[in-house]
Length: 214
Image 1 (tube, rainbow, N blue to C red):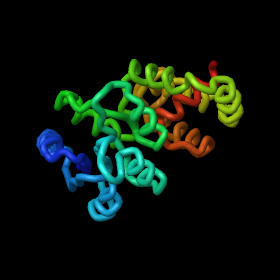
Image 2: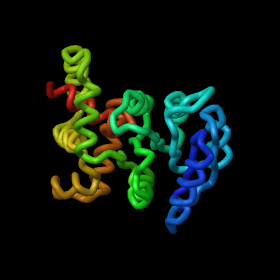
Image 3: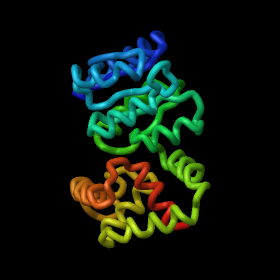
Image 4: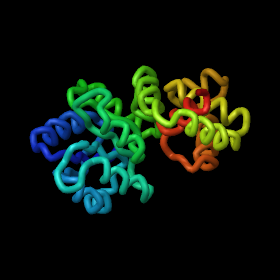
């Protein structure tokens, strides 16, 4: 079972998300919170695999709550947003979120998103990944390019190839098909990539690769 917590200051949204996710046979909603300030205690108590996190909340917002969780090696985080590419999405990715969901996401896509993130992939379609990377990397281009190239120079040729495919928005299974290897082998390569780069987030890795190519 995939253990999920829902964090949103709107009780109706929490109820709706909880009903949708609980309808999946492999997902269990183990806790809810109405504020980012409650997240740390909620996670310690319920030990979820994924936290579905609203961005805009009073006291402690979803960005800061996400940053706290990911800095402590906590569960994966899916942020909730109203607009497809608002500025909070970029802040959430930088804070370590594994992806984002629109609040009007269809139920089946919401369930699949939780499964994808729980499995270790980023919850971003290739089109959304490209859009995020383009918007994120517009400022400080030259400095970011030089820094990214230096960091990526630590990777082996195969590790760099895997990183490039991540930047295209491919899943582990899709990368394995491109490289004619198993999904487990792709995960092994990614583990090494993340260790060398000091990253644990596929979207931030994708941004790094795109920065280096500019």
